[in-house]
Length: 555
Image 1: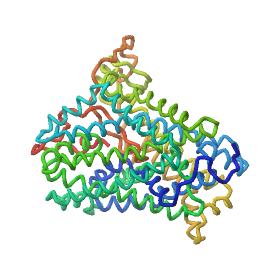
Image 2 (image 1 turned 30 degrees about the vertical axis):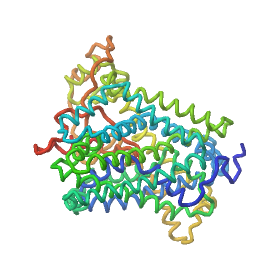
Image 3 (image 1 turned 180 degrees about the vertical axis):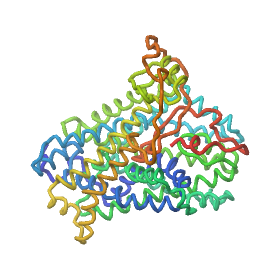
Image 4 (image 1 turned 90 degrees about the horizontal axis):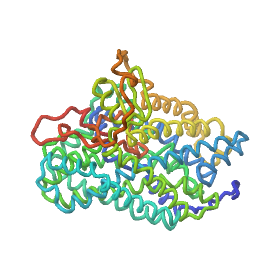
């Protein structure tokens, strides 16, 4: 393999439009559908959207330009592109580890993302069968609980989605990825428009639009600003190698700057239109708005089940979710597959091995939703922490110590990727392009006609973006929160040594879903945080008192 080659051995996108659709497909995921509309409505509406657009301009687009730039300049997998450009800059080849961390993050995300996408596949058929027609909150919540409690059913749908992803990636850039994108992305846009039209006829479109866009600056708190900043980073699939890998296949004549702006705009438009399609339907049925799995798999099925044409449009909605997940998932394993191909492995073999590995790792996430729901990979209390805490210990600890926090395998993989690996990946991408890479190479790849605009971008990617990403990292990991933090005093009841850990029992039922941290999102990178089945009292109920917004938000 020649690292100095200017053409990719994997192929080149057929056109600039295909690259735009591919990168948009990678960015548009479950977070655009089940998270962004809700956090916008809850945090100031129009004020939040405006601040979010500013964050996209100052962190999302500059870092995305940097990641695409590395990919196109390197023309290889993220790992080998970083090695090549580090060699060109006469710095350590260890920068290749940045590409490795990105590829590993995508692999880990695929393991649990496939599980969630399997839920959507199941709901396509469940909705189409009319199972939700006239169903109340208890019935719909019971269907979701039954799905999560059945490991074999979850494994079957997880496997089905993994096969769909492998089938596309194994065929290569042009015969596989490009052909799939030519179908998936237009279908996604068509379905979104159809659902928007359905929402317009719901009778509550104005209420849904007001929820999203009414300008309330008083709700744009420091926490809300950090949520906007974090989502602006995660929503564009930055730091996981996917955009870098896609950038390696970008046509030479395509402008990186204008193309990236279009991708950022499309990603935001999809999220806003999704909100305009979802919340009028929710309000028309007297339900409370929410986010995450609770919104998608409980609230919306109730709404569709009580509306004329709900079976058809509900089925179309879950098809939309599947297409969004599918277009994102194929980008998750491409970096690892591309690297294996460059090592001499045939693409089909490489794809099967990578896909099978992610599928096998996903079994841990499947079991953490049911049989292993009490087993915690990481546990934190005010004065103690531990790894691999068994079910009896966790049950006793969490019952006695209200401040105890645990993470199942599902939660752990999400936290590791979205809160640690992706922000650090984005941070070092900005540092490498801004401070390490040869400026002549940077300017040649960007080819920006306006030198002043280039200097603004360079200043942002060198200074502002790294600082902003550090804020995201500190906030998402819990190292820092705005405002005064009160110390929590805890005694022996919050120490793991107090409890007997000799007996391991993984047969206990999964714990009730907790609130998601404000920074999580699923494809925020496109990457979602998923929890166990919602407690019955958290299931939205028609014509009853609304649940607390924090409890309703699952994403």
